[in-house]
Length: 132
Image 1 (cartoon, one colour):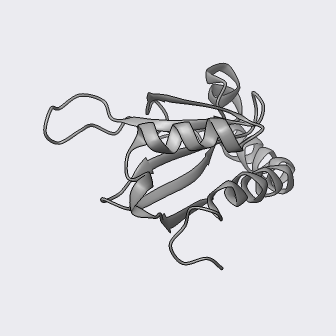
Image 2: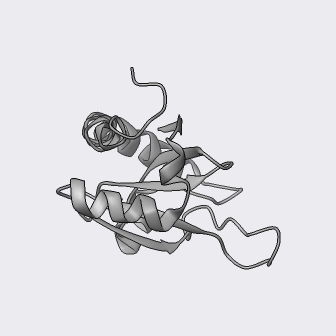
Protein backbone atom coordinates (compact mmCIF):
# COMPACT_ATOMS: atom_id res chain seq x y z
CA UNK A 1 0.00 0.00 0.00
CA UNK A 2 1.48 3.26 -1.15
CA UNK A 3 0.10 6.69 -1.94
CA UNK A 4 1.45 10.08 -3.05
CA UNK A 5 0.07 13.16 -1.27
CA UNK A 6 0.81 16.83 -1.96
CA UNK A 7 1.18 18.83 1.28
CA UNK A 8 0.87 22.54 2.00
CA UNK A 9 4.16 24.45 1.77
CA UNK A 10 4.57 24.92 5.55
CA UNK A 11 5.00 21.14 5.89
CA UNK A 12 7.88 20.77 3.40
CA UNK A 13 10.43 19.18 5.76
CA UNK A 14 10.60 16.00 7.81
CA UNK A 15 11.00 18.03 11.00
CA UNK A 16 7.85 20.15 10.46
CA UNK A 17 5.88 17.07 9.44
CA UNK A 18 7.07 15.15 12.52
CA UNK A 19 6.16 18.09 14.81
CA UNK A 20 2.65 18.21 13.32
CA UNK A 21 2.18 14.44 13.70
CA UNK A 22 3.37 14.45 17.32
CA UNK A 23 0.83 17.18 18.15
CA UNK A 24 -2.15 15.88 16.16
CA UNK A 25 -1.83 12.10 16.20
CA UNK A 26 -2.46 9.50 18.85
CA UNK A 27 0.38 7.49 17.32
CA UNK A 28 4.10 7.62 18.00
CA UNK A 29 6.12 9.30 15.25
CA UNK A 30 9.84 9.82 14.82
CA UNK A 31 12.45 10.59 12.18
CA UNK A 32 14.48 7.47 11.36
CA UNK A 33 16.75 6.09 8.68
CA UNK A 34 14.83 4.27 5.96
CA UNK A 35 15.86 0.69 6.70
CA UNK A 36 12.82 -0.76 4.86
CA UNK A 37 13.84 0.30 1.32
CA UNK A 38 17.41 1.37 2.10
CA UNK A 39 17.15 4.54 0.02
CA UNK A 40 20.24 6.72 -0.26
CA UNK A 41 20.53 10.49 -0.51
CA UNK A 42 21.96 11.49 -3.90
CA UNK A 43 23.94 14.49 -2.63
CA UNK A 44 25.66 12.85 0.33
CA UNK A 45 25.44 9.15 -0.47
CA UNK A 46 24.16 8.47 3.07
CA UNK A 47 21.04 6.50 3.92
CA UNK A 48 17.91 8.67 3.58
CA UNK A 49 15.62 9.50 6.47
CA UNK A 50 11.86 9.19 6.74
CA UNK A 51 9.13 9.86 9.28
CA UNK A 52 7.92 6.63 10.88
CA UNK A 53 4.40 6.63 12.34
CA UNK A 54 3.80 3.64 14.62
CA UNK A 55 0.31 2.47 15.44
CA UNK A 56 1.73 -0.69 17.00
CA UNK A 57 4.72 -2.98 16.55
CA UNK A 58 2.92 -4.55 13.60
CA UNK A 59 1.36 -1.52 11.86
CA UNK A 60 3.00 1.71 10.75
CA UNK A 61 3.52 4.23 7.96
CA UNK A 62 6.76 5.37 6.42
CA UNK A 63 6.64 8.93 5.01
CA UNK A 64 9.32 10.51 2.84
CA UNK A 65 9.50 13.37 0.37
CA UNK A 66 9.48 12.56 -3.35
CA UNK A 67 9.93 16.25 -4.20
CA UNK A 68 9.49 19.60 -2.45
CA UNK A 69 5.82 19.24 -1.38
CA UNK A 70 4.91 15.67 -2.36
CA UNK A 71 5.28 12.84 0.14
CA UNK A 72 5.09 9.14 -0.40
CA UNK A 73 3.32 7.23 2.36
CA UNK A 74 3.60 3.49 2.50
CA UNK A 75 2.67 0.74 4.92
CA UNK A 76 5.53 -0.82 6.88
CA UNK A 77 5.93 -3.13 9.83
CA UNK A 78 7.88 -0.91 12.27
CA UNK A 79 9.30 -3.69 14.44
CA UNK A 80 12.44 -5.02 12.72
CA UNK A 81 11.97 -8.61 13.98
CA UNK A 82 8.30 -8.73 12.93
CA UNK A 83 9.23 -7.12 9.61
CA UNK A 84 11.80 -9.84 8.99
CA UNK A 85 9.15 -12.52 9.56
CA UNK A 86 5.98 -10.89 8.16
CA UNK A 87 7.49 -8.46 5.62
CA UNK A 88 8.01 -9.10 1.94
CA UNK A 89 10.84 -11.49 1.16
CA UNK A 90 13.70 -9.83 -0.74
CA UNK A 91 15.34 -13.10 -1.75
CA UNK A 92 15.78 -13.59 -5.49
CA UNK A 93 15.28 -17.37 -5.23
CA UNK A 94 12.66 -18.81 -2.93
CA UNK A 95 11.56 -22.37 -2.40
CA UNK A 96 8.00 -23.57 -2.99
CA UNK A 97 7.27 -23.61 0.75
CA UNK A 98 8.39 -19.97 1.07
CA UNK A 99 6.16 -18.93 -1.83
CA UNK A 100 3.08 -20.74 -0.48
CA UNK A 101 3.63 -19.50 3.08
CA UNK A 102 4.18 -15.97 1.74
CA UNK A 103 0.82 -15.99 -0.08
CA UNK A 104 -1.01 -17.32 2.99
CA UNK A 105 0.68 -14.63 5.08
CA UNK A 106 -0.36 -11.88 2.61
CA UNK A 107 -3.99 -13.03 2.59
CA UNK A 108 -4.18 -13.25 6.39
CA UNK A 109 -2.68 -9.78 6.93
CA UNK A 110 -4.31 -7.89 4.04
CA UNK A 111 -7.47 -6.77 5.90
CA UNK A 112 -5.83 -5.48 9.09
CA UNK A 113 -3.05 -3.81 7.08
CA UNK A 114 -5.55 -1.96 4.84
CA UNK A 115 -7.54 -0.82 7.87
CA UNK A 116 -4.43 0.49 9.67
CA UNK A 117 -3.18 2.22 6.49
CA UNK A 118 -6.51 4.02 5.97
CA UNK A 119 -6.69 5.12 9.64
CA UNK A 120 -3.19 6.56 9.61
CA UNK A 121 -3.66 8.16 6.17
CA UNK A 122 -6.43 10.35 7.64
CA UNK A 123 -3.72 12.25 9.58
CA UNK A 124 -2.78 13.96 6.31
CA UNK A 125 -6.27 15.23 5.41
CA UNK A 126 -5.78 18.53 7.32
CA UNK A 127 -2.47 19.38 5.69
CA UNK A 128 -2.90 18.19 2.10
CA UNK A 129 -3.28 20.69 -0.73
CA UNK A 130 -6.14 19.01 -2.53
CA UNK A 131 -8.54 17.76 0.12
CA UNK A 132 -10.70 14.86 -0.99
